[in-house]
Length: 115
Image (cartoon, rainbow, N blue to C red):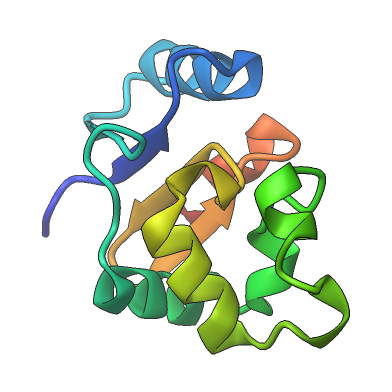
């Protein structure tokens, strides 16, 4: 089984908390700085399936780029395309483990998918 992957933004305090929590728990994981190495549309579609939540639930709706999307009518495909083009629209941190993923808000939620 592959190691979990933390979608991480080192400038985000919640993301740094998640990184520290995983290290503290002795979890072996990989870090992907998604702002430097953005997820493709295909990867974002896979992430949506693993999260099992509407894309809007893990979109940073307070960002100006989101507000420019005419947010009242944004469907999953539109949001995924926007995230692929503007990765900062993705909520963080997110841990991916196998066929599951969790948004770390609160950060302890990422531990729930590790088993």
